[in-house]
Length: 383
Ligand SMILES: *Cc1c(COP(=O)(O)O)cnc(C)c1O
Image 1: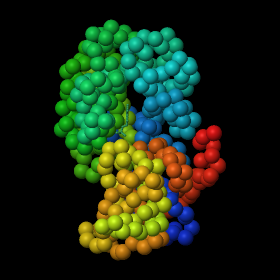
Image 2: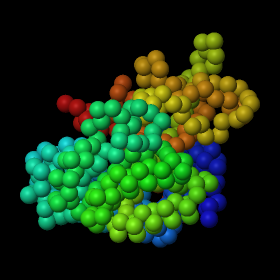
Image 3: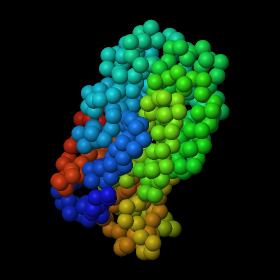
Image 4: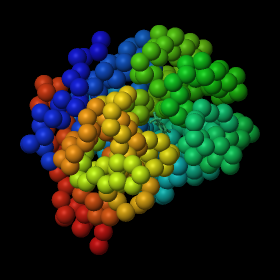
C-alpha cells in the first residue's frame, strides 16, 4: 500500500538551488499514505472522520485530503470558517467558550455545534437548535504522556464532568464529543477507554444520534491493529445505534511534513553547534512546549555529532543533538521531520525571523511554492 517514497534528503538536494530556505515541505505522497488508512477505517468501521484543524490548517493540500475525510472540526470560529471555506463537507464547530457574536456567526455554516459546558449549552441552545447540537464530556479518564495536554487532568475545564448535569442536559442533545487521547498508539488502552465510556454513559449514549471520539488515536502508525480498531468502533456504534466520528489531527498528517533548514554558522562550545536559518521557538514551538527533541531526517547512528540550534536569542532554542553521516558545513541542508502538525499553525514572528515559505510536493513530484512570506507580513502582524 505504501507509495514509493523518495528519501527527503534527495528531494531537497535536487531543489537546493531553486528553493530558498527555510521552508515547510508537505509531501503529498506521504500524506496520501495516512489518508488511505483513514479511508480504510471509514469504510470498515462505518465511522466518519473530520480533520482537526487546530493541528493542521494548511489548506493548499485540502484538495488532496477532501475525498478521504468527511469534513473538519474546529476549536474556534475562525477554524470553523476556514473549514467551511476551504475544505467544505461537514463543519463541526466546537470552542472551549463561544461568545454571543461567535455563536451567531458560526451557526450560519456549522453542520454541528458542540458546546464545552452545560452552561454554554443552556445559554446558546435557542440560537442553534435547528442544528445538531452536541456537548463535550470529560470522562475523567484519558491517555496522555503530558499533564499539559491531559484533558482529564485535575480541575480540567474541558468538557462537562458532572453526571447530574448531564442527565439534565440530555434532552437538548443529539450528540456528544469525548476527546481523551493524546498520541495514543496503544490499541488496548484505547479499547479500555471506550469500554469505560460505554459503561459510564450508557444512559446517555442510548438516546444520541452521534458520538465523536475526538482525536489523539495514532491509528495510522505502522503496525497499528487497524482491523481490531475498526471492529471495536463498529461494535460500539452498533450497540448504541450511533454514528461514530473520529477527529484525527496528528495521525492524519504524521510523517508528511518537513522543515527544511540550512546551516548558517557552526560554533563550538564544548561541542559543535550548527545554527540554522529557522528556529524551534518560531517554527516548531510544540517541541519547546513539550521539551522534546525534533525528529531529524537522515540522522546517522555514527558520525560527526552536532547540536542543531535555532537562531532566536532564546538560549534553549535547540532542535536536538544528532550524529550526521558527514561533517556539516555552512550551507548544508538540514530537513527536520514531522514538521506539519502543531507547527505551522503555531508559527510566529518572534525575533523577526523570516517565516518559512510553504512548499508542497505534489503527487506528480512537482515542487510548488504555495506561500512566501515577506517583511510586509511581519509588519502587518502588528501595528
Ligand atoms: C486536539 C484535538 C483533536 C486532534 O487531536 P490529535 O491528537 O491531533 O489527533 C481532536 N479533537 C479535539 C476536541 C481536540 O482538542
